[in-house]
Image (cartoon, rainbow, N blue to C red; front, side, top):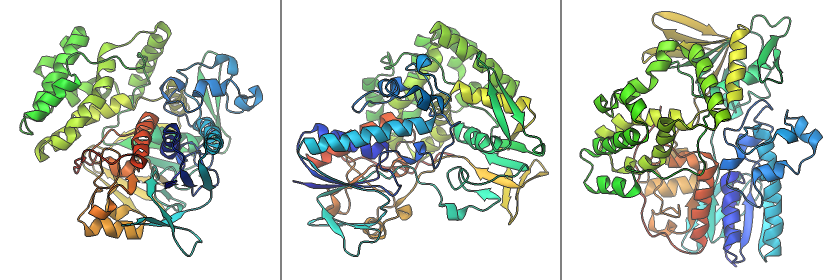
Length: 536
């Protein structure tokens, strides 16, 4: 049997394992997981999340393994669900639930996966609390070193599914956290001035993690939420900040699975790419305009879409939010999307942009350097804002903190300075200095390069071949140097963000896992082309 190593037992590793099982060819599989429990994944572990943190995906969107998420939830004990504030009688497929609960689902599915694989004749070893320290491709296979083992083990294929990469907790201090997942969950934050860089869901989650140390959210049956600050915590002031000071939309209703696009079809986008990089972005924008005008002529007319370009559409997209201010806009947006959910009404322009982001992403490797930058600051920001809409419950909690006088939003603009001091952080913006006793960087995952790899030998092998960014095939196996081909499947998301700026979510994890499983059966058929795309 072929010997396969899966490094990382989060969602990407789980979906890879599941796809290997579906090929029905018995394999010898060793799963390495540095956490105590394999099959959970950092985004859903109880060590890195509080019960208030909601998964930004519902059961209807999660690729099932042995059972759908909603069916698994319905088998759980009522009392267990109640500990997460979940009532079994109210469960539905579009519901956003605590991340930790989703982690329990993945753990359960992983345990079942191991059992089913063994029944099918696979040899399976699960190494928990075991960190892989190095990986080396050789002409004979792949050598893999694990912590505490003096000699390497050899495999025919190593699957790198290490997921998100955040700064170590050692990089945090009592006054600065380089990410919400760098010790914040265990830290005791005093009632003080707290700054949070980022106004997306990660920033809101960081704010909730701090707020619940100093008060309680009180939720009524009509979904109204209040925040009651503890006596003695009156000094708590939380400031969310970003360049735009804009809040994300609440998640909106739309048909799932997605309906096909009418004008910006795969064939139309391929035809635009075939004409060459010169003018490609503008040709694609013409397709986007035509698709939007077809889907929602009224909205297109209201925003004067025919007068906009790939460079000016971002300003029009966010104009209403900037005019109303973040909190007033959040109230009206929340009211609108909740009304649409009750009526099962789809807003055509929102739904069209949501479907377009995946279709348009394939142009990114083909853009000129100038157009890549235009795309990054224009259309990319619109697509990210649209698909990163957040649970309504998170917006309600944010508004409750606002009503309690705990939270505010600071617009930084393009020109600001951040200075990390030993005991505080200083932000200089528009000639004013703002001081924070505790500062949390919640801007999310940044793209990583070869130099960031935690495996020294593999890093050296790639760098010696001039691979500043790993080059992978259709099945995500590394393509250079030549002796690496077909031996290492590279599915670590942060390293894929350079030519796939929208790579995110469990659907992508499942797609990557399915592709990597093919590496155990057949070689890659096409080279993927990389670029240097770095989102803000």
